[in-house]
Length: 252
Image 1 (spheres, rainbow, N blue to C red):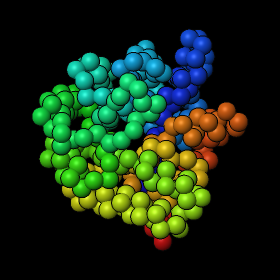
Image 2 (image 1 turned 60 degrees about the vertical axis):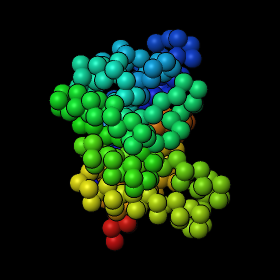
Image 3 (image 1 turned 135 degrees about the horizontal axis):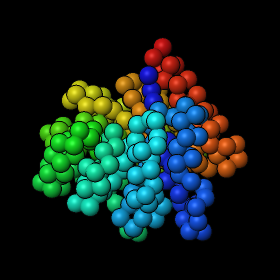
């Protein structure tokens, strides 16, 4: 059954805007859990623009569902992951000037350094995920490196979906969905878990959730934005309903 990982980074973004104590990301994680989230995702960035080290430690101690730590493949971040032991560590590219992650991780270009990163994480019994573009060469490298989960970058699909009037039947949108389908099939054929995420929202999520074999979607900004008006628990509940409805329909 398809699962939802809720990214709560932007709850911390709101807190950091005033360098205050509220809203508390831990409270957000509890509300997301009560709304039906299957996991909590946070990205501990090098510049600590939103989530802080203390947040990750408290989430590790206090959350009752799986914790996915998004992280750059740096010595510092690997050390933090090995110490805290989240259920999953997702390796992502990171740029100081980017507003959010702008593309998939280049596994091919970084394979030498990534081998030691994966070895350290897996030796700590942490499942390793890689955030990659829908590219068969990157998928092959993920398998060669021993990555257990590939999360396909859905940003290009989301951009085209919006540009084409939010119409999933437009040829350009269908082409982007087909890239995700092909990538997902390749990931599964190579024995890895197929996840997806980035820029998914209440309007564009269902075509992705309906793709065969997708196990988990990671969604943050759209859910936190909706929560401003309806509360986080309800925002998560509605997203989960849309995903499961689409996944069920896709199996028919």
